[in-house]
Length: 88
Image 1 (cartoon, rainbow, N blue to C red):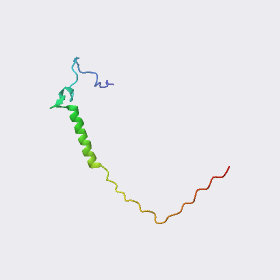
Image 2: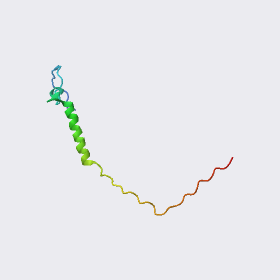
Image 3: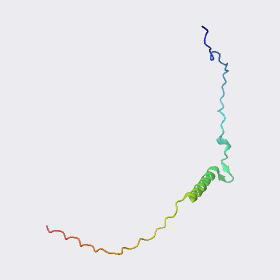
Image 4: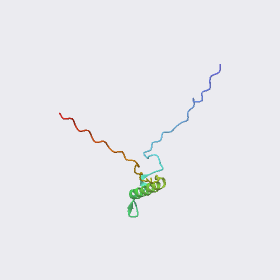
């Protein structure tokens, strides 16, 4: 019998590396300016969101419901007087 193949018998040599730097990411808060001209960045973001929601509302708002007044009844039914309370 022949010995079975061992594909994981040889593992690559890994040299340990230690770094205190965080992993590079796409977003860094330091890249966002705190002010754009005289306005704060957060104020501009809120203003843009307000305008975007307003534009969205104008595009998808429901139709204004037009109601016509109901016609008054053509026949009137006289109401019966309420019965008098029984003496005690």
